Image 1 (cartoon, rainbow, N blue to C red):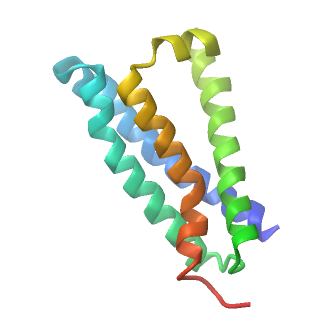
Image 2 (image 1 turned 90 degrees about the vertical axis):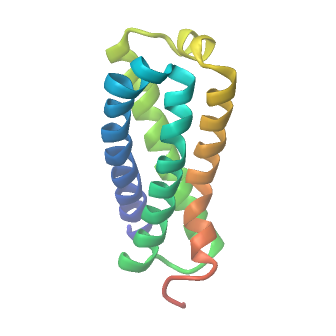
Length: 134
């Protein structure tokens, strides 16, 4: 139960930050700078937010200190993020998954995919040095 709760907290924190930053990006940054530049400008902030959240949940929620539990947290949080993004967000935007993938910029899309990988791995990465000992 501790792993599921930590994964949910991790997902919720990063999603909330992404919602705020994404809104700012879509409403103000993209019209001024273009979609690619706006997405690439937002990306480092999201990576930092997910790294901070992973470290925070690992220490504050006393997540087990081991690769298995920490990788499970990242995988569950990533699954929640993808389900919400591909399920709800695409429906609200009136896009299919195929249409969404076809319209992604190759540069910012690749960077986004790599940031998702980092998001999934941060709990394990920070668990190597922080968190309660068994």
